[in-house]
Length: 283
Image (cartoon, rainbow, N blue to C red; front, side):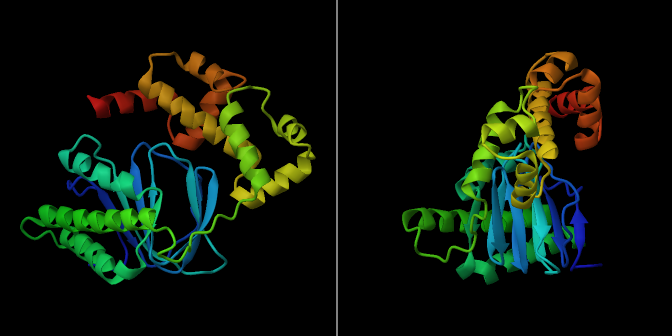
């Protein structure tokens, strides 16, 4: 039994938990319809979250809200050890009881003074589910609940006295690139929102915008716009009865074929398959 690396995805405990002793840069930028928690045990990573880039270090707990575009990537050859928790059982009473704590902590909380305690609780949580002793799921839930209570209390203390802890999550994105991202998040659905028109809007050359955008976000311009469009499409597929054609047009795609190809590339299945899956999960 490997206690240093595991991926527990079918726990029946109301959450998934993953432990990695060595991480790789995420191959894709992605989003999902549930909360994710990433806790850094050791090492350092860069993390793109929504519209910001952070330098994430040991003792940081990052919370990714549903529908938020994100990607973690390694800094040079830095070896990073971490825990991931996915709260994907959205209808459970357990999840609903934790949600206020999660929201209190988001988007991140620094738990430097609590690291030993919290890391011990993560270890115990994973071991319970790995070993499967009597009432393991109840005990694992208790450990995870304690982690979130401690983290949320720290988040409240930090909000009351923001200078009480070292700022180790520094925003690395310059003002121009953040303005570009804000612009794209508003105008992504317009078919004429292209690299050329966006560069002209900000008084930049296409090549300069392309290079600067990739350096700041680790996305290509087209990749980012397509991800934002598909994120919106997922919401429309789940929350409305609009046709795939209507949705593709509303999200700024030039054709239904282009939309279908892009949707499958990012989500891994067709738009109709996604709609059916989401409908079944809510039934």
